[in-house]
Image 1: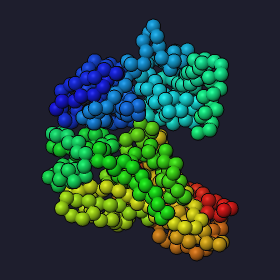
Image 2 (image 1 turned 60 degrees about the horizontal axis):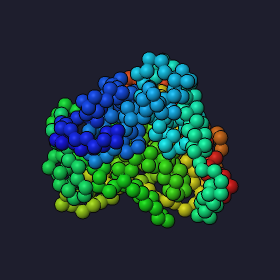
Image 3 (image 1 turned 135 degrees about the vertical axis):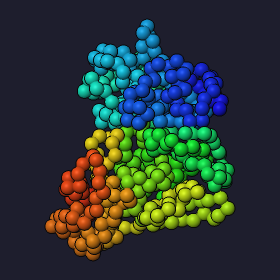
Image 4 (image 1 turned 180 degrees about the horizontal axis):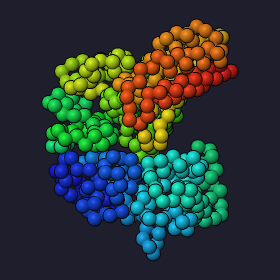
Length: 176
Length: 280
């Protein structure tokens, strides 16, 4: 069957078997950040991707279910020259060791920060609950997500226009 | 082996496909992790418009494809039932699994480890079953789960409704698993209504120990109409552990799980009483 969907912002059309998983299709497209760790058990999180912004385990997601929807893998987040704040924070805190779990971790963290820009530690741990890491012990990964959240909030603060316009916007929101 | 994948957008079309032998799938987690080898025609039911919730004075109605994350985020579900449903949904699996596991699938799959049926039996919930060329019917979830052949076989479980009682209710929900991703070793849910100084409408349900959720009826009777003293709660919890019929499980032996049930039942009952006796 034919599967049309958006992958990392690009409209994509591929031929896939009715029983194919999203993982199989993404790997066929050359997206090697999407990894297999648990033999399609849905327990390790290395195959995590965002489907319409929600974290899913691509190894147990039917590929045809992605039809007409948007998939994001870690390839879309940044590159070595311009890493995403989450990727930079993972490096800065030493949250990357063997690196196998890192793409899934970063996407799980992105899904969290997109819906909750100022998460508590419990929120971070819950958001990462689908993702296993056998190297780090998780402490540095949790620190990385917290650091990225702080930096992204600061970045947004700095990006806000200064002066009267901001004050007016805030007042208008408060009235609503 | 999945031979065909259908994505109907209306319930009658899905019912027709299922009547012709199609296998309904919502989150599809159980189906894909089971690595089924027989030939299957999958009927994806996530585009049927069954993903919403509605609330009236007397009940909460959940579409079958409401996800656990959807339930966690459903802040408008009222009263004790709403709080218990959110608690049970949040306790189930990891974030990525909660994003796809559905209320209906967790019931219809009839797995011993399923968590949502434990809460739904304690809440006296009912399920709506629809089949092609037949009128929709509502059944108590406990009765539906007890049937030798699930009543939704050959059709669909389309909605779940939960009564919202008047009065002061309390609940306790205790799930114990080795990791957030793992199946529960035992789950205990308690519900009760306060009537002056005594408890009424007591429900004490244990899950993940046998094929279906088990109501600890004798322990419920020990509490029904009595003041919930610490001694009585402890006795009810001990009776629950004593009478539980525990199926063999490679994760842990029956002796360990029996002790676990006693601890979880005591905690669930204490939480229920704390809630039920709170100041209005």
